[in-house]
Image (cartoon, rainbow, N blue to C red; front, side, top):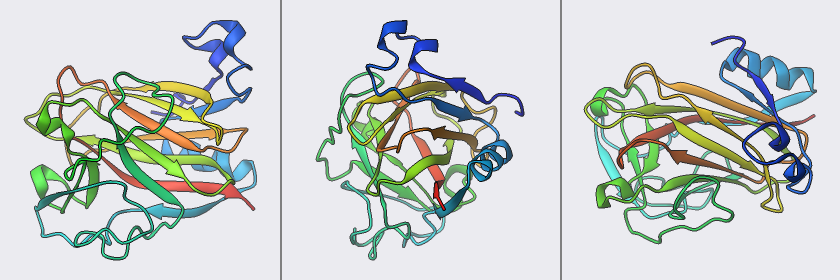
Amino acid sequence: MKGRSVIATLALMVLPFGAAFAQGGSTCTFYFDPAEFRIANESHGKFTKGIETFEEAVIDTAGKNCFPGPLGPFPSPPIFPNGLDVRNLIIQDNITPGPNPPAPNPSGSPCALYAIGSGFIGSNSKKVGEDLFLQGINASIDLLFTEPNHTGVGFKLSRFQGFPAGGWHVSVFNKANELMGEADVAGPTASEPFKEFFGVWCQQTIGRINIYDLSPAPAPDAIDDIELWEEV
């Protein structure tokens, strides 16, 4: 997928030209190749703050358990008794209809999120996703960054065999919740264990990333290997 990185400002995307700098005034570059993403971050003097793999989850092989959000550095027993290993990341569902939700809007459901073990419907690692699709709700996922120095974020998305497939719409917000950029991620060319990489680098600090499921019907998807980059 080399060569698919694209410099994207809001002026060059679906919003009108006049909205570009009124919505945060930042340029974001999107990457679909992990090597290109990491080289770009290093060229900007960034280093990896951490990679959240979810391998700290306490879950059986091929198992799946749901739990309430948010998921972060605080204990979420019994699956994440010590919270996430990456301490400056919070993950939660967002039930605002449509892409680009302007603010966090979690459901409060006791089964808002799920964790799976390696071997679940072909998965080769532990992962996390939103579980509201079982209620027919096409919710999205918010990644919230609690420190003011993350300008590069990458992660992997995946689908499961036997369920509806589709891509994702990813929107990136600064710490003031202003939209800085958005991009569509094509659906994966295969189901688990295949994962589709997406990365973004922005001039401004990233405060929130929303991942909206473009599947034609509510369907499970998963996120893994969330890597955070910051200035040296």
